[in-house]
Image (cartoon, rainbow, N blue to C red; front, side, top):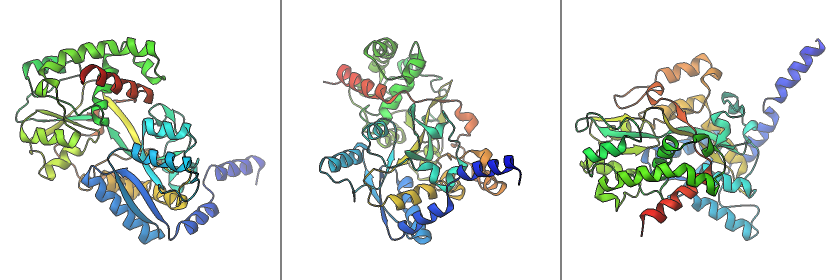
Length: 395
């Protein structure tokens, strides 16, 4: 073999997870139970996690217990408390569905296991190049400390039988609400969906959206949010209940849409409207719209705490979530409908065919219809944004 060919072969081998090492991980994982701490507010997601556990137990001897959270911070706080108590091994949290500020907090405090993503065999289907969506979390480089599993994108839904033309962009919400008083609201910004509504408006209205990608400063916050608060002050009087009360979360707002109390709801799942129609939770005339110019999107990740009792099992689950057949099942509107995180260019013909064969639905938008994906602001912006909103608009 020529020297250059040998070097190329060695480089290729080094770029892939060592098979022997992964076999060791599989052996150590067998018999483990992975306590996956994940938001439990969506029945379809809960059912999918249950299915994942059934599959990993049958295939690898790895059981999954879904610890249902109302807020990811619950799991982060548990890990912090365990470290404070000196519990640096055999922790109670093995895997966390995590994003943004919570990931940044755990990363900065050295509370994460890893880097581990490059060691997952199915990572070969990911684009992990610098700046790629699977390599960034709210502008923070992932650096192998969390593994992607589903794509999220902010969308609005409305009943096309009642609304002919929803707002075309965030600025237009003011005029739309004035013409339709009491017919629009948003979840309380203490909930991530309400905070996302504000962030979407901030990205559109900020004088310099690029400033939102950097850690927030007092001066930048004052300058970039000034148009947002002027917009919100104009919108608020014509909101549902005069902007004095807000639905607790997206599920409650969806119920308000179904009951005819409001005309617009919102979600971070482009398939949620089609799924809700299938479940009888929204009328068949419900449809999805996105503002011109695109909406905030991000990848959902799973991370392993530094003291996880079943770190090997957690890696097996993370790897299973990246299998093309699992990602195709997840994207099936009849299962969950979440868009895949895999790079289509890295899939073989069989895997591509599985995605091409997925069923469609009238209320399920295509990737083209969803428009551009806008990056999340730096996590520090969300914290300041929700705090300032509460100071301005709550008593």
